[in-house]
Length: 447
Image (tube, rainbow, N blue to C red; front, side):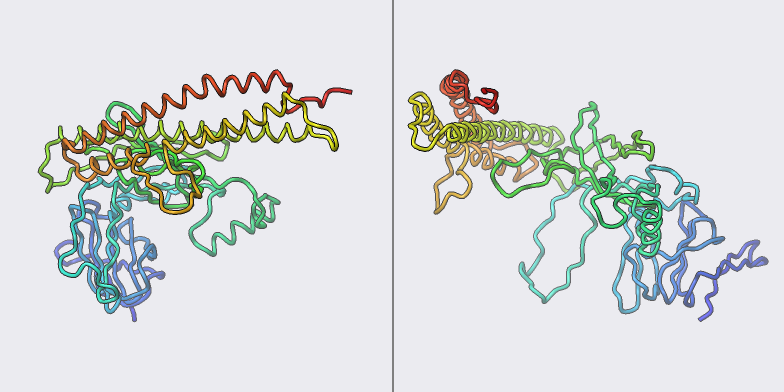
C-alpha cells in the first residue's frame, strides 16, 4: 500500500520523492497541469489528491469525488476539466479546475477574492435520440451546470465551514463567546454574497444572492436577465435572494461584481469579466438574436406593468376591507348605524365588485373553482406572446409580432380602466371615508 511518486530531472539523474504522510493508498495515476507546473494531480486507491506547490504539500480532493480508486486521469485543456476514471465507480469530471492554478495558502485569508470565471456556453439542448421516456432503463448523469461558473474564495469566522468537524468547532467557539445563533436561536442573519451583472453599457441585467461558506465557493449565473416578481395571491415565491429568471441575455462580454459585508460591516467587492459564447450551431444572425432579446424585454415590461396593476387592485380591495372593519367597530348593540356609514358600506360593496371585474381583465382570480376560459386575460396574452417569441432565438416571426401587439393593446386598455376607476370612483370613496371620520384613530381621541 506504499504510494510512490517521483519528480525526475536532469534526464533521469535526479529523483525527488513527492509523497507526504497525508497521501493514502498506492499510486495509480498522476498528471501535471499544462499551464501551472506546480499544480499536480495524483490518483490513488483511496481517491484524488492535489498539490498546488509542486508536491511539497498535498490535500485530498473530496468535493464531489468519492473515496474510490482513480485508475486514470485526463485533462480537457479547452474546458480546463479534469476527467477521472475509477474502477467500478464510473467517471467523474471536475468542471473548470483553473481556480487551483497559483492557489496559495494566503489566498484563504482574503475576505472575498475571485479565482476564476468560466465562459458561459449558450446552446439549445436537442431531443435525445431513440426512446424519449426510458424510465429506469437508462442511466443519465447530470450535465455541467448551464451558465457561467465563477469560483471565489471567502474567509471569516462568521461564515460556516464546509468541513463538519471544523463547523462544530466554530459553533463551539461561538457558544463559549456567548454569540447569538450558536445554540440554534435566530441569531444574526446568514451572510450571503450578492452577484451583480452588467452588460457592456453598464446596465444591470441580473442581481442574485447566494449562500457562502469559508474557503472555495462556486456560483453559476444561468445567463438570464432579471425576471418579474410574481402576481399576488398565488403560492408565495421568495424573492429576497433575487427575482425569478428572465430571458437569456445575448452573447458578449459582461461585468460581474461579487459583494458581501465584511466583519466591520463595510462592503467588500470583487470584479471580473464574464464572456458568453454563442451557440455554434445557430443559423440566426447576431442582429436577429438582439431583436429577439429586445422583444422579450418589451414583453417582460408588459408583464411587470400587469403585475403592478393587479397589485393596485389587491391593495385597494384590502383598503376597502379595512374601512368596512372600522365601520363595524362603530356599531353598538341596539343602536342603528348612522345612515352615512350605511351608505359607505353599500358603496364599499359595489367598489369591491368592480375591483373583482377589473382583476378578471388581467387574470383569473386565485382560488376560482372550475375550468374557466382565460385566453382573453392580459397575463395570458402576454404569456402567449412570450411563448411565440421565446420558442426561438431568431427574429420574431409575423405571428409572434401579432401576438405581441395583441398583448400590448389588451394591457393598455386594462390599465386605462384601472386608472379611470382609481381616479374617479375610488377617489370619491376615499373622500367620503375621510369626511365620515373613518380612520385608525377615528373616535379614539374623543373623551
